[in-house]
Amino acid sequence: MSSLNEQMPVSTTMLPHYESPLPTLYEPQPQPPKPRLMFKMPRVVPDQKAKFESDELFRRLARETEVRYTGYRDRPLEERRQRFQAGVREGHTEMAFMTNGTNMNLQFSTTGFSNNLKEVDFDKEPGKVHLRSPFIMNGVCVRWRGYVDLERLDGVGCLEFDEENAAEEDRTLREEIEKYKARLREFEEKQQRAFRVPTTSHAHPHAHTHAHAEQANIQVR
Image (cartoon, rainbow, N blue to C red; front, side, top):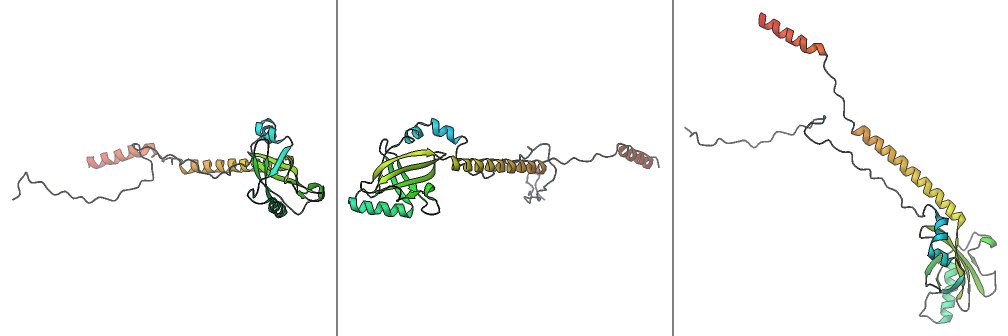
């Protein structure tokens, strides 16, 4: 016969956890996850022209100043001349503003433009090539404009505010913002519907009274 002090074995078998669809009163309610929506980083600032006119760097580069080809500095001058022209005809070159040392890798389109809109023009002035290169710098659409002497590989250049491309980038920026706002509203509405607490139906007020009456009848019998 087993002693009273002897401990009875305790079963460690766990019952399966019952997942109730209803929220409990003692556990914190689940919070909807924070929205994780992809938003493209804007390429430009909201007011490009104002920044171009007020930023000190843009103000310095907007003045026509001496520029120089900076590619292949360790090569002989004749080879550099050939490489410069070959690169420009392919659609790229490296130029630096000599007043402040700002170096830029310029890209050009060599086809599909009229004479007035050429980005590379060897015919405008003998012994020189005139260049125009649009790009985005510090969130502002600008255009490098100038010319380079084909013998000395230096010239004059400046930065201009690119009105046309700035307007196009502004439209793209506004469209992306509106799309993001619409996706965010849709996401929030889905979250509100998903985490809405279901309302439970209440029993009829006479049901409880009727049950007591039935029980009383049984006891009397």
